[in-house]
Length: 288
Image (cartoon, rainbow, N blue to C red; front, side):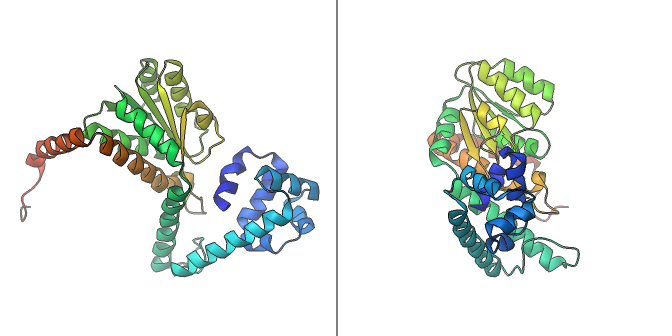
């Protein structure tokens, strides 16, 4: 539920977005609030709170509040299981606290991404990539690192895959796409201009398009034939760029391994020859 709220937040009208912010900032307080109290905290009306509940998939505030209470209870159990007093990092945390909290958030991001991932969409992306005569992967910033990771993995098993770093090179490469090719774009928000532009152009040229994003209602998702959604949560010291990376890399691994399975014989052969090719660059045990 909380994942859905975070994903819906960027697309909500301003007044409803304030309600979402109040809920996500202090879930426990929101669970104990009446509809009028929640409206006051969000600086809006009770009618807006009801509209917000309906927008995110509930019949009204009562149903929303019950589901929110269940989500809060599950989160408390997860925190206790991980030995974390509360999820946010604060200035008094020592090294042990910081390590536990980051490990908790990153493990949770992977678990929620895996649980909520549309497996039919994953299989559609896998089929397109496995059959493609060429593949581009677009991303900038932290998402650009994810793009590079996917391109390296697919190239190593014999697929023709590029991840242009420069935004002009992304557009130039997208312009050369055609039927039988695949373009993948990575963006946490789904609103980063460069990957949206490149994916839009590749699609116009006839490529099958895949988006990896935390926002299924974003411009990037609207441009893609297939959307693979992550479930990453921002915290004070972990911005979108940091919190998205681990979830994006998990999706990359899901996609890569399924593609490798589809091309099992070719993958096995490619991994063997590429392994042998770099052995001369490895130092012998005991050498300095």
